[in-house]
Length: 240
Image: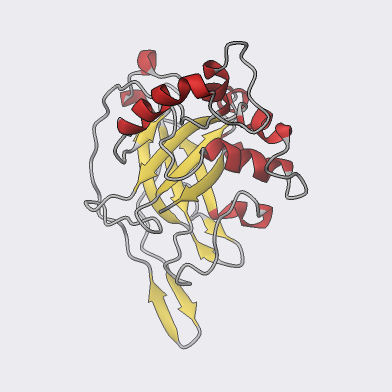
């Protein structure tokens, strides 16, 4: 039996989504997920503190506010009652998100136009400009990519659809630490080490609103994924 997921000092995490690994088309995925069992995603969504405590890659003390569990097939699980949290003069009862069954379809995705792999692909010698800019001769192509911008979506694997800048940079900066500047080349190199595990968007059907029409992102290093180390996955959230 799995215990309730809690961010110590803040409160219980909300259950966001589960993924039946055995139902996914493993042959079509670009990441090696377990062949059976369930991935469960949890996030401290601000229900009990009006969004006061934020989960931020740049704040290691907040990393416990988002979590991924792999529950192997056959492990007994059971629904729990919604937690009730004592908030000063009144008890606050969590609200569960409505259950929305989803099916998967295979789609091609591409990295964001500011992702280091995208920038390198546009350069004849594969070297990114010091200012991380797009080469002049590629700007028409980049604008065409922007015109075909993807809609908000839920993703397993593939490339993230960021609301703002590439999410890989946010994770890389958080891992390297605040003393490393955003312009430091190590941030771009570290960003290449992370791949998307899952993205969950704002979804009216599920009554989910992440910030202002934002999305939740979990990323992981491929070597950690291969070893089933979902405890090493990193989280970030972006919104408009």
